[in-house]
Length: 58
Image (cartoon, rainbow, N blue to C red; front, top):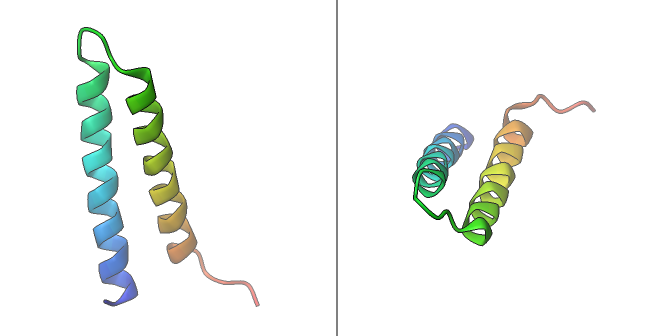
């Protein structure tokens, strides 16, 4: 898998997590533990995308 493909796959996962977060927050009684877990996973993916897209400084 190329880096570009990997980044696109990460972006898809990021969007899926965003949808899951939205669905959980709009429930009558959102599960705080689930929200925390989803947000952490989303942040890890975002960090990985940034790491892969930033030019390396050597």
